[in-house]
Image (cartoon, rainbow, N blue to C red; front, side):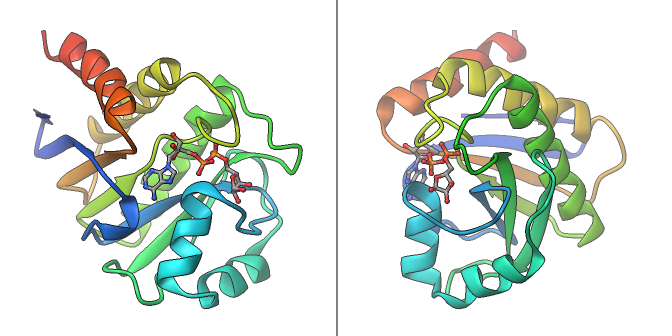
Length: 175
Ligand code: AR6
């Protein structure tokens, strides 16, 4: 499913974010930027440990901030590490919103056209996916209503129930 806001498309897809071709892939990170399980583990396995080594040199960052590294062997130019939590691995609405907005800002600074997000905070962080969908989609819309280099913002959802949660929110926005 997708919707267009100005010149930017928001798309939803189900799958593994490390398989997606986009200028940047967002990592669901903690603020020290060590890469544990979930999305971070998959990025490290497929893209190579160099991504974590680069990230660790940039951390710690404030919770809710985001920083870019190279993407190793992935089909992307950059990995944007979005710190949705500290090392207590606890998240909330504000942290997810800021991590999303700051990832989009980094993408604009890099002047890239496409970015792929996972559902931040909903794995290790234990945050409800339907709430994360509302927060991330409304932050994205707020951002792309302004000036942006982005033509496509893709949400890559792991499993059908996560996809459906995002689809429900996006359909509500479309109406
Ligand atoms: N592609 C897309 N989505 C995925 C994938 C994948 N390959 N793997 C998992 N998900 P998580 P968080 C989904 O735990 O909650 C690590 O230790 C998953 O089902 O990756 O923000 C980091 O280093 C869930 O819905 O991120 C941090 O310390 C969503 O992605 C911490 O976990 C996010 O799950 C970040 O925790």
